[in-house]
Length: 382
Image (tube, rainbow, N blue to C red; front, side, top):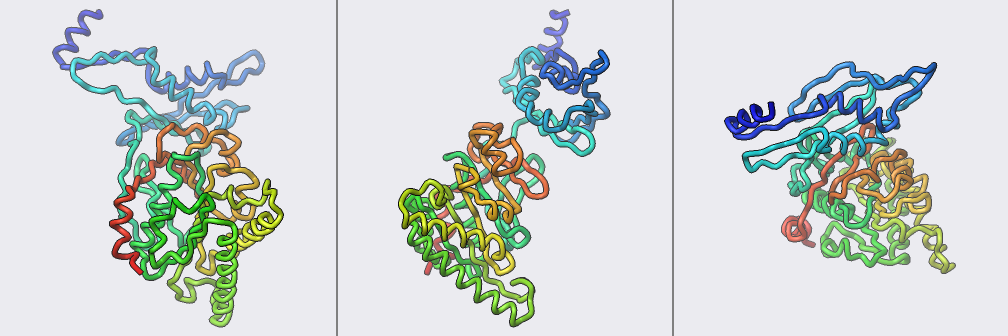
């Protein structure tokens, strides 16, 4: 039998032999072996396939899950299922052409039933930056099916988290550059980087950048000025009997970009005077998060060490969007997303979870420093 298949494969130019059934059957078997079943009355209840649907680059399998298990139980086993689908025991590939076997990837979601999409090709590991955004949108990245954008008019504030060197700072530069190019006459920035300000060094001379704060004292000074400006805008809106800047017809927007939030956190600070300043910084940032959206103030709040101290409750509650790159633990993922998942992202720079009222896995755009300089040279000149 093997000899016949081999001869047939030679004529075709390449061939493969699949073992272990369909992907749906393999998923059921892997989940059973991973303990995703329920025993009662001496019987065993496992996931049941309801239907499947083929898309342009995936097959979606829909399952009923046993009573007593939740979708989160299956999501926690995502890596196990994915690795099981790619093990050599399931598929043996024999090639006569120089073709590379693609790793399968899955996405798991739940809407009354468990949906597992199996993609035969992985997501791209590099998406070059292109300024295709309009208005107050900035590019978030490429998902499996579409380009994803964040609209700061709809969602004024965003939390950005991720382990160092996995894309957090690149995204900040992506967002700042896009806004300078697209809204050069309407946008202003306060950039806070208490690691020394090097992340934002290229933007220091841009006319849109009012401050690059690299220490606690300068950060507090800038935030106090923003607080005073917020009060002025509020008084203006009161006079116009307007609820927000959109209704008042104000086009200017001010972005406060914080990188790294842990450096501005008061918890653990031993110097009494610096601690006092940091407490006031936290209070003002929380106030901006609470009331600044309607007044035209926007927060991009970034941290690589997400804890209850570095991500204050008021900031998190009022940031309805989260962009989360690879994190080290499920606890850190819970702090940012209120769910696990960021710890399971692959070790791919730029891969992230974008969470609003729905969740997307995206590959965020990579922007070169030379590209930044070329883009802001004209629009950012003082």
